[in-house]
Length: 180
Image (cartoon, rainbow, N blue to C red; front, side):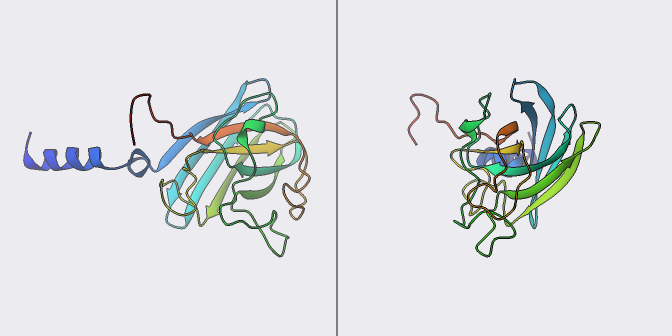
């Protein structure tokens, strides 16, 4: 192994996994656990770009949010916790004291049941341990709700039940016997 290879290997072993991998792909599931598509998150200079590509959904306008726990336990996805809100703002882009960093507003699921959309969550990162990171101790998830988001009512815009979920970043766990 030459000196360059040793340096690259040492550097890669010393970097956090999320810093080496600025892209995260995950499956979206419905309330029964059936996979309905994917979400991809890419760390960019101005925030995290999230791309969703889903099919087999119920058509209509629906609220979509980043939630503060990386769990999608069905059937109601309550395990995903509240909205991602490290800045302690009120819900909604129409609120004078908002929005949460996890507010994505509304999406329109097409008549054929598909949703293909890109979002950029400005001011966020996938880099753990940094302010406004989506890679928190609890992880984060993406939720699509049953109803449209009114984009002003705190805490969730009256967007209703959680019907589709994807774990964006997983909770950090320490293997048994390891001391941090």
